[in-house]
Figure 1 (cartoon, rainbow, N blue to C red):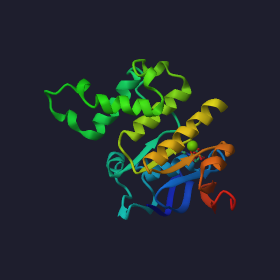
Figure 2: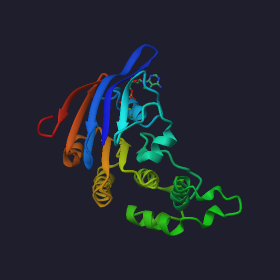
Figure 3: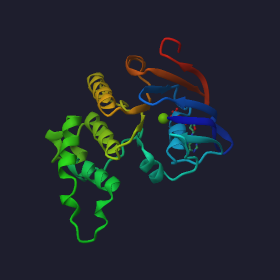
Figure 4: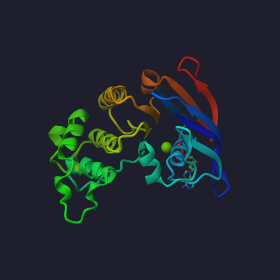
Length: 230
Ligand code: ADP
Ligand code: MG
């Protein structure tokens, strides 16, 4: 599904991602692990077009997407979340998901239509499946950190991706929140037949759900395989 070849990115001469090649097969959950500063977030940003690679190629479902813009890559079927939560804090939880559905569906281009009436059922259904329906009318800022991360997952899912990239989806969560988040992620990935690539520092999480693990260290891929092999 995803084929990355020799991708590189330097910041002022410092190689943050130093020639990484990685293939990801369709369906199933792959983890990218490595210490802080290993290049995990940079690698994700190269896949999604948020950073431009100095060298190397990325292809998705057989199409070369190297250098494409983030919105174009999203439209092709790659959704993502960010290490630092990226939501509209002053909008309600419902409006956050609704806005994401509208952005992807593109129905709001008619000047005369009222965006507030669009995708209502879809947005509530999404909140239901995330376990956030009871918070739908609260402003997003009022959610717990764990629930904000769930909301961000919903925003990423609103583009109906086939490949979902999650950068530290459980960062800052308590142990209880982490377990709930991982159970939710597994269920959603299975229901939607998603391919998931995620970075994570919690090794219990990684070894409990990843079918494959890739290890980054100082910008290089130093190991790759099943959890047992790694
Ligand atoms: P990880 O996500 O594995 O913790 P990052 O990809 O965030 O690692 O960072 C890899 C390295 O690249 C780090 O040394 C970081 O300081 C550096 N880096 C990341 N982004 C930038 C940037 N925009 N400008 C300069 N250096 C950066
Ligand atoms: Mg990171």
